[in-house]
Image 1 (cartoon, helix red, strand yellow):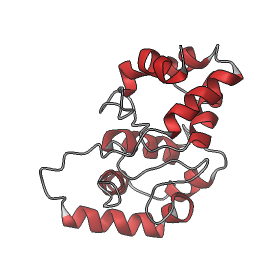
Image 2 (cartoon, rainbow, N blue to C red):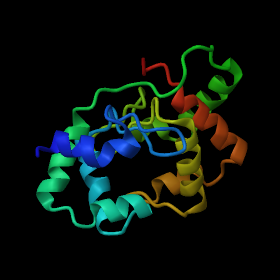
Image 3 (spheres, helix red, strand yellow):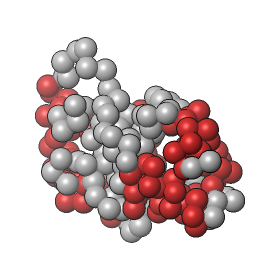
Length: 175
């Protein structure tokens, strides 16, 4: 079985066949970079990233498995996760944009928030997932490669995180 087939068999239950995931279940992998994916799989494999499901899935992965799955993820096309039937709240979008600009999001994740290499795509990710992850970085429950995320979010209030997640999830760079 090749890795695309294994992805469909082992990963699609949570992340979907197209990698879009599902709100409140799993983040979208669509549009994530292969280098970011292999790094995250390695962290799950070694118990350095917290997810009971993903740690259990990845614990027996070989290096070839890590590369194979990350290659599949790297090829998943970007897809928006938010409904497009309603116009975004312009006030919340402006607040989120300001927060992204003032708290260094664009420095690492890029002006289009598409990430690169080991930096994840934020644009178009599920809002609920973003809220949870931003909150975990803010509290120190989750760590990145460095403390940059924790430091950038340390002074934000919960409503700031909500507006930032709202903006990131609806970023115009994702169609």
